[in-house]
Length: 145
Image 1 (tube, helix red, strand yellow):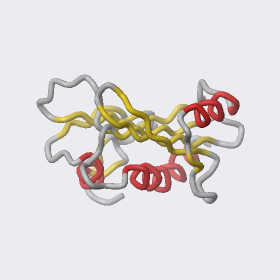
Image 2 (image 1 turned 135 degrees about the horizontal axis):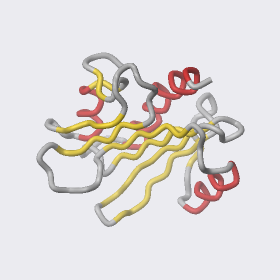
Image 3 (image 1 turned 60 degrees about the horizontal axis):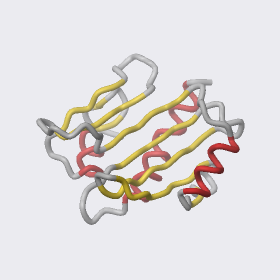
């Protein structure tokens, strides 16, 4: 992911494309620190919610069974085979449609979570979430051993 890095890992261009925001503030992990989160909010907005949220839980508080239960409840779709285990889902929230992806290690010890709320108009938010998993999972899961 090229360009100036937000939260030490994600380019401003990628965030702008996914969220549709020209002006935003990204907070979370700092360059040189282990990545654990990146929260993107509209600059100057009074909304509490994030337009994009990426978290890496090591260790994850959820078991494989809990993750599979969430997938069933939210009618999730499996990630492509080369990215699994994991899934994407869309749910209706108070502030509109939310798209998310969860990817985890086979033992569920580590989990990557990506939430896009609501995302740039006209984009395939499920594809955006999958692409973020594709780019971030190898980096994060490798670094955390």
